Length: 212
Image (cartoon, rainbow, N blue to C red; front, side, top):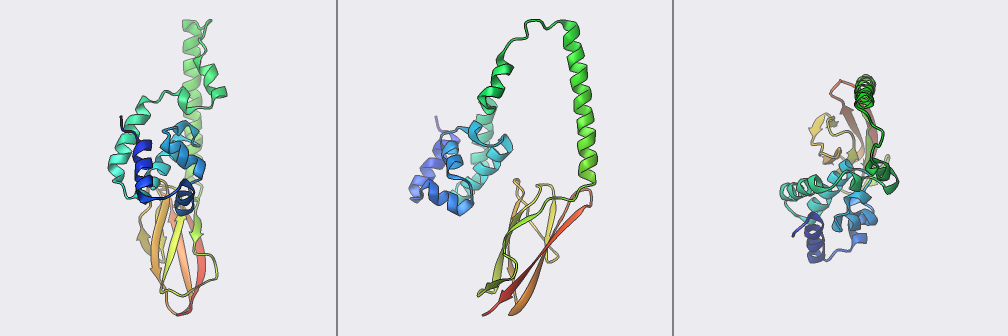
């Protein structure tokens, strides 16, 4: 049966790229590349990271991302909850509740729902008042380039609006964005703003010198 890991591994081998080469190209650690090819998604930091890593890997190999992600979602539905957790965490979940009575169960359920509700309210309040995270991996501040176009690359939250010098750019499902910006001879200022759906803004500025 064909799996996400086998498809990616086959495509990588056809492309003649080593796992180390993939790591250098898309900045995903080699051990995570190997775990994906072995369909060992439990070795990744979280299911959301697994989704983003698989999508980036498929895009890099030139595979149809929609088809690969469909395979990935189908596989993830077959993975048990315990397989996504470290062994020390999953063992207690597999232990039976020997002394669980209906009264205790209802008490635990009500307490759990109340706790989840309060945590949700707290998280929403915190999110409303907090500006979105924003990191830029390229360009470096005060970088000197010899090309008239500069790659602007970074990461933020997936539901954030990103503007580069006042022009909107696409933010992928994993929060990453990539754009090429034209520069003029001399010193150019590149301003990147990330605006959350609550209107909070984070701004980063880079100065780039263009010497034709």
